[in-house]
Amino acid sequence: MGFVGGFVRHDNPYHGPVILSKRLQDDTLKGAFVRVYENRHRRTAFETILHLLDRNHDGKLSDEEKAQARIVLFGHSWGGSAVVLLARDLQRVGIPVLLTVQVDSVAKPWQKDSIVPENVAAAVNFYQPHGIIKGRPQIVAADPSKTQILGNFRYDYKKEPVQCSNLSWYDRFITPGHARSECDPHLWTRVEDLVKQSLAPAAGVVAAAPLSMQ
Image (cartoon, rainbow, N blue to C red; front, side):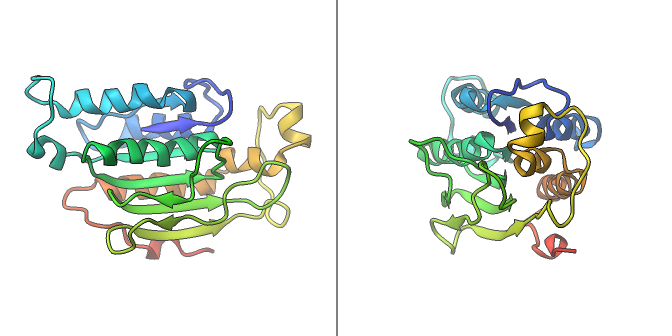
């Protein structure tokens, strides 16, 4: 499940999480459920997960149903923060998460997106450091013995700019780095690879090696 940032609609075709979800729908493992939500619709995403895991449709989740969960969460900006909050929601009801991916994660004033809960097996953070809106530079595990932080990876679009189409005037001149983190094809290809590795048959904790910076 993915989350878009800001006030972006879940079906806006120019935004990173939406583009990634389309690629995953076209190419991911058979039977996988792929959907993107607005960051303010975290509760809907949570209820959808409960419904999907309730295989016998009895209205409650058994320990076996919870253990069978294979969940990957990814998001950009406010969507990155929504990823951590949803993982915490799932922790409270005993549901594990394979992987969380935060891309230029920005927390709302009442949120905290820096500490990954212990029900998450692996987590990774991509960020850029420039502009009035910039992503969280570091995430940490609430329990390092249970969660592997694959890395906090910095992208500098002043040194290595990327070309993005369909940027608004505001994105182009006020928040250029933040906007480019959402449309950077190299970054989102790395996210896609991580998601597929996590969902591959018999996948354990995702190896950090493929994430080494180029």
